[in-house]
Image (cartoon, rainbow, N blue to C red; front, side):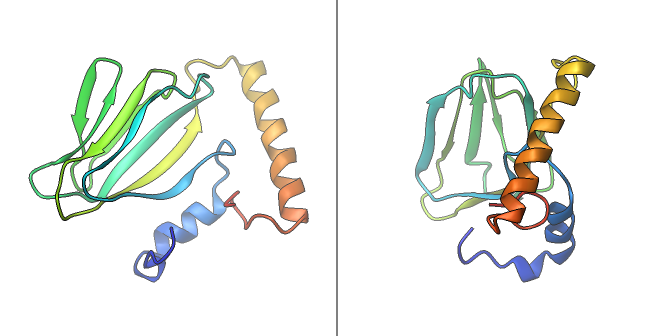
Length: 142
């Protein structure tokens, strides 16, 4: 995230730089006041997403709807969800942004051991190639 004060969270940044995730996101997501992400589905069940509230607008004004359920972020609390289901977010605050720590990880429930091994191999090869080309740092960050 441009202008994010990573120096304020060196331990978290260090961990995220080192852990292999499923070739997707591990980092901080920010949502400006009165903005949202439209309803969508990621279309596969390879990953689960965990988001922990880092900076949440007062009054729990930031929410995510996954399928029929709507949850609100709280500072220091995690929400885990399957992006196969339609989901959307909104920050109702007029003046406070929402920041979450976002980590995608393999969906160990949905993938068979063979599928998991195959996907890990594909993503390890991808990360090796991108690192050799100088396109990512350690841990798969683009």
